[in-house]
Length: 192
Ligand code: GRF
Image (cartoon, rainbow, N blue to C red; front, top):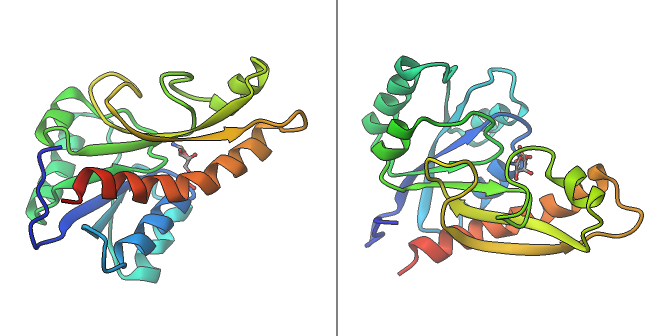
């Protein structure tokens, strides 16, 4: 990460596609004095994303783009540059960003993934961990590069899988940890 916080907080945009519970935890974190970021914008590819309601609740700008082609991505880039956004946090964002988009932000894009990467890149992570009788799963925050769920790992949290766990119960347990892991990852990469 090439950002230096100095005395100014890093202007951050959060990208979501769904519920936005990680978004909510990041907003709360950003309001702490020790936080090195401010959240300036919420971006979604899905106008029906539940998490978009946090824009109104917390008075944060929201924008919806379809991310279907490079033209749409260019509009996103323009919007972000206009507001001097220097950090992007993907939080349940279900679109794959193009190489050129990622290059534009020079490694300053983070993602949270619900598995212990490099295990279970992609979708249905909880089902796959249970099916393989893994003892643990968890979550990972990593830097986004052009290969899916493959960038440098910042931090991880292990979560025990119990015999009775279903993908749903495991997802819930892991989500609780995600809400702590993402702020901790931001502190780790941005604090001096
Ligand atoms: C989280 O489990 C995240 O790791 C994954 O999608 C889920 C998003 O949840 N990428 P939420 O929208 O933050 O509640």
